[in-house]
Length: 624
Image (cartoon, rainbow, N blue to C red; front, side):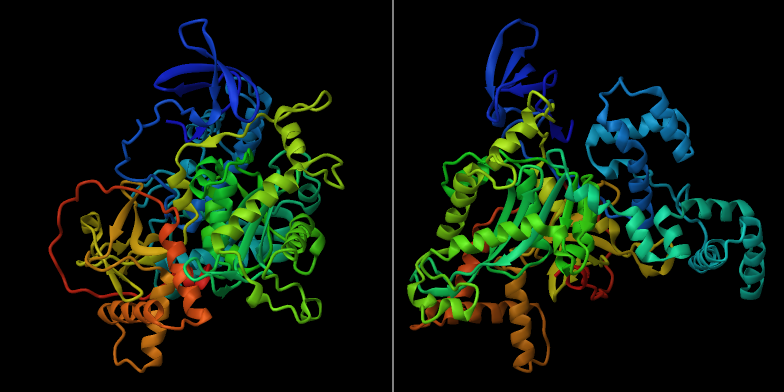
């Protein structure tokens, strides 16, 4: 089954269980299609179409096939393959010029059949991870040597072959000497040749000319990004602390300001994605904004009760971000690469590289000044205006206002630089003009849950006999049994780390990537009687326990403290602004859309053993 629903002439789709062939695009909402096997033409709504072989309605998948957790060098090899075949994807299958195929094969150092294989694997799935080398026990592309020898080879290649420009033969002589000194077995010279071939172009430039030049050469060129001349060639994303006080849903008393994350498409200047929250910017808010940008908005708008057309969706070619840590983490970087999105980080202190998103955030700030509860940009501008006293909008009302302002006002208004409304420019990008052909409607991703999981933050843990522990809370499911006490093949003294994605709004369930099944599985609390909780609530409880001088911070203490904190917030006669904000944040987390998956029957049980836990929190270090 394809991972994308392509809306274009000649594509086959399913509507109400019947197969149709699309013959013509009408607009953003409908197409003309011919019923297969007949000459009957009908008009079909785009958002009711399905890709071929899509699971029937109500039939939940047993698990979510998602981005694999693989070593960095294997991932880099898949990205390298993508670079060779990407120019060929612009041509329809079967119409790719032979000379381009051969040129790609020559550049990659493989035969033309291999290039065809890579193209087929990518087109079947639509994601970069399809190009990962198949797992082999110490096979091709995976080091069979011990960790000490591997590190020595890596060091020799970097210091002698790359930095000192020594030939592979000369480098091997040096390797022999070092192996003899260290008492290690001397590898075959072909092993060194293979390791040299594994070095990426980026690493070669870093070793010889420095990281700065490597970034310039291997990253997208600023000039090409700023002057994006096709639809979805580039999207800019950034955060903003909204200059308006909002009130809680129950008592309509002030709870502070909200954060807005926006994504704007450069060619049309249309806003393609947004995320509003009370939590500070994080990898989660950035990821959810990108998910919102990629997916059609109809289900989300229906859930919010907003009747408005927002026909902007599709995967962008490049996403341009600033250098904030929420963008720099591995979660965003790897998810972008998985979905063939080029992450580009703006040059520090160069505002021209983010001019479009910065300018539009300024437009939003100006619009908010007319609303009750506005805090304005500076104290001088606010003067004696009582922002909290005049606050009137709830979180949901502010979100609805922003959507209507973006789609109903800004998208319809003539843009000063484009001389036409942004939505009209988007239409030109899709359907074209008399002078320039359009790109057609962007494909629709079939598996929304898969996309959301790919952009969720993660933690890495070893698996013990009774599951895993994260943040002093235990998680378990039978699907983990087969991986208990599994050792790292490169360092048998250490247990293997596995990746667990999570939704910060509800950490009662983690999503475990099974390397053998190549799918994600749900792993709930080990104690199912415990209530759902956000990561924010867990961290608050841990801080409270430590501040009170608790002798031990454990799962029982965390849930007990969380219960007490909720009782204080909910039962206080006169609530403080902070407590109201906490309650509102919990309500928002509870109502948010979260990934879904069902687990398969458990694998064979392993014999129990004592539990030893690691305390590694990848998300807190990289993406928080």
